[in-house]
Image (tube, rainbow, N blue to C red; front, side, top):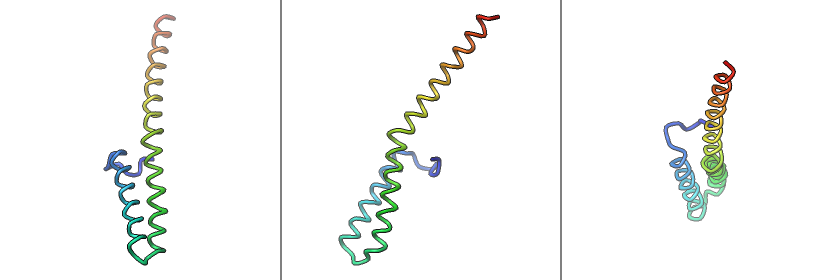
Length: 83
C-alpha cells in the first residue's frame, strides 16, 4: 500500500480518476480500442485501489494507532499501580 509515497493519497485518487476519464475519452475519440481498453482496466484498478485506501485503510490505520496509544497508557497505569 505504500507504492506511491511522493504523492498524497488524495492526489493519487484524483490523478487516477483523471487518467481513467482520459482513457474513456480516448476510447470514444480514437480507433485504438485494445490499448485504450487495457489502459482503462489498469486505471480503473488504480482508481478503486486509491479510493479504498483513502476511505477505509487510512482511517483504520489512524484508529489502530490511537488504540495502541491508549493500550500503552493503560499498561503503564497498570504497571504503576502494581508497583
